Length: 213
Image (cartoon, rainbow, N blue to C red; front, side):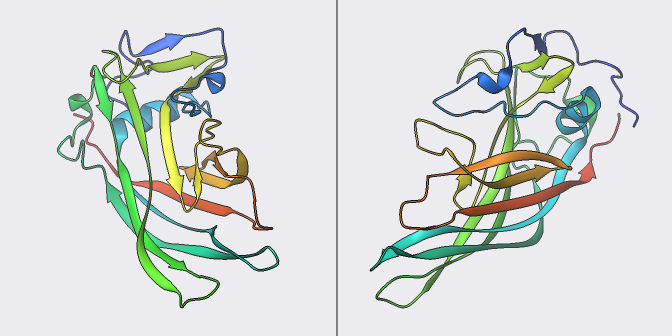
């Protein structure tokens, strides 16, 4: 894989640390859950411009008599998403690790909501993820961390009832994975409360890359 800026990120993009970034909490959320190779980190920041993905899931919608759960069932058919926040940046040379860099990839689907005593309804649903780098501390310093030869990018993601681990919001029950280019990011839902079983999975791959120069 060829990069315009080979072998390393420009100076200042990466903060080397002796502490596991997966232990960091921002607003209660685990936003550095997975470390990846240098090549993968560079691809996501500089090369990946659009992703194609699909997924599904279920989250409790109502608790019926006898602790019998009924669900909101989510379906995300295959679709492509280009980040609206950097869609105009078609070249790698436009992204030489700016002070603030945010992607926002959103995928649309449906949620069928079942109830105990009324007919089902159907709503539009969203899934997605974002990468964020902030060196000016506008929303809190969030660099790329280097720890034990792995690179950790601030990554927020969600599908169905599953999101980043977040103890403050009680998102602590493992419910599936949000997979980006083969890298699995764990999804967490609220712990079951009515014999329900939360499920959430989404998988996406890079399908449009920026030009090298």
